[in-house]
Length: 185
Image (cartoon, rainbow, N blue to C red):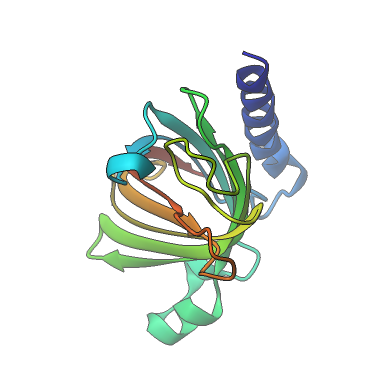
């Protein structure tokens, strides 16, 4: 329960930070905030039971929202930071990185991101089930496909993966699929 209360605190801080747009009259500091729920998509002994909740805050310091064309989009990523919390006591993660959006028509879009994460999971094989991750710091990437409901609200299907890219022998990784609801400022 202590870890859950910490997740609630971190989420509350991230949501409170979204109010920082008031201090920046011309541009909101926070571009988007997402709340999601996902489940492990790993199999057999690597599967993690339960639901994983997530909160992610996106900023747009490089002008991704104003980018014209693919090259400009690539050269102007957004920044993101977030938390994944296991409701079943499995690995939790804090993550940050860069992400890019590509709109398909007026309402549909794709979103991809890369970065790093810090996790609370098992490091070395110990005879128990669940992924063994080798290092506390992992690479983190995600893919999402979504639809803009209106000017502010969006719904996304997501896939996320974190691993150490075989830097050390234990590299089972963490993989999830789920849904998110986003609010664009």
